[in-house]
Length: 121
Image 1 (cartoon, one colour):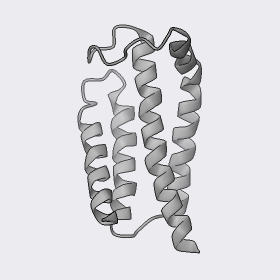
Image 2 (cartoon, rainbow, N blue to C red):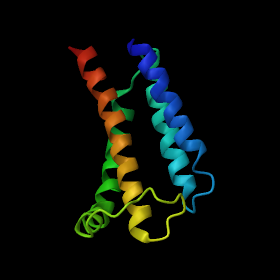
Image 3 (cartoon, rainbow, N blue to C red):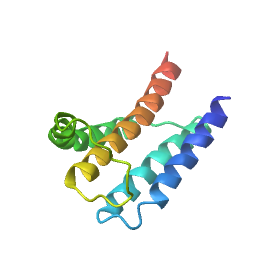
């Protein structure tokens, strides 16, 4: 079951990367999504590198911290929809989506880190 979940998550991150091609800053997202897909993909066969995972958590976490003010601003606006249109017509839409994308990335990386720690015990 664990292997199946790894394969599904790897495919999801590959799909996340694939749909970034038309985003103005898509190259950043393609790289990070592919990187996470690689980490989870290697996890499928039990190959996890704690240092790589921690580096990815650090990079993603710092990136996410830069978006917290925009996320808070969106909350204070009353959390208007960010899914109405695929094209982000207002800055809060794009920045909130990016923040939430990083939350997903960090969740996947934390999962992999926990598996490394579990294997060390």
